[in-house]
Length: 393
Image 1 (cartoon, rainbow, N blue to C red):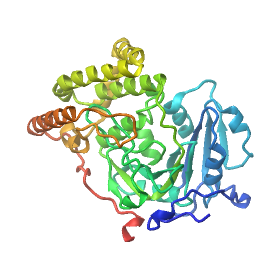
Image 2: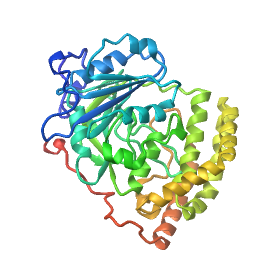
Image 3: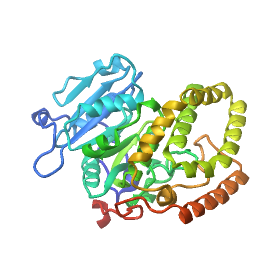
C-alpha cells in the first residue's frame, strides 16, 4: 500500500505490511553526509503491534540501527524473526518507559536517536524527516505527525500543548490530518515518535528515571527549551499510533504524581511562589474529581510520595535551575492557561476555572516579564520557524 505524502492527507492509511531487505540489513546507520539514525523501541506486555512496528522500521532505506528493549514483553519479542539490524536488550527488571528508553539510547550509535513506541507504524521517510529537522542549528527535539491507527485520517498528536500547572495532552487529537501540514514550533513533543540529536539527548541527561512512566516527554521538552534549544513539529514525519486511551487508577497515580514532580522542579523559585495560590485551588479540584471517579486513594498516594521525597525533589530543582540558560519569563509564552484537551480525551474543567486560570496566568506572566532579567547567553529561538522539506508543498 502506498504511503501518503503530506499533500495527500485523505489517503493517510498505514502500510498493510513492510518488506524487509536482507541485503541492506548490515546498514545499521545511514550513509555519506546524512546523519546516522538509531531507533529505540520499548516493549512491554502483550504488544499486539510490535511485529508491525519493527517491520516498518526494517523497511526504511538504509536500514537503521534498531535497539529493542524488552521491558516485560518476552513472548512478543521472542516471536520476532532475528535480524542483524535489531539489538535486543533485556533488563533484569521493568525500568519503566523513562528508564527503558534511557537504556536503549545508551546502546545506540547513531548521530540522531528516534524513539518509536511499540504500537506505532512509521512511514518510510519519517526517520529521515525527523533526522533532518533535529540536525538544524538550534533545534533540540522534533515531533512527528502522529495519526490514529484506528482512524488513519485523524490526528493523535501534532505536538503536545503544556498548561502552566503541568497538564499536557495530545495536541489537536481528532482533527483531520489534512488540517496540519505546516511545520511549527511547539511546546512539547509527543513521546510516541520523536527525534533528538545524540549529543543533545546526553546533554539533557535523557529522560529522568524518577518519572517511570508518563509526563517524561513534557519534562524533557521543557528542559530542552530551558537549555536554549527549540522543539519543532514535523508534519512530513508521519506515523500511525494504536494507543490505548484508557484511564485506570495506577495510570492516574503516575500522571498526577509526575505532573507535580515536574511542576515543583521545573520553575524558578519566584515563579513557584506566584503560581502557588492557583495551584492549590486546582489541586483541591483534582481531588474532588478523583473522589468522584474512584481514584482518590491514588491521588492521596501521589501527595504522600511528594512529601516523602522532598529532599530528592529539592536536589532535582537545584540541578535543573543551575543548568538552564533561559528564564521562566522568556519561556512563559510557550505555555497555555486553559485546561482544554480535545473532546473524548477524558479530562474536562468548568469554564469558570479556565477563565480564572487565564486571568491568573496573565498576572503571573506580567510580573515575570517586569521583574526577571533575561538569563540566557543565547538568542531566544521560541518563535523562530525552522524550514523543513514540507515548506515547498
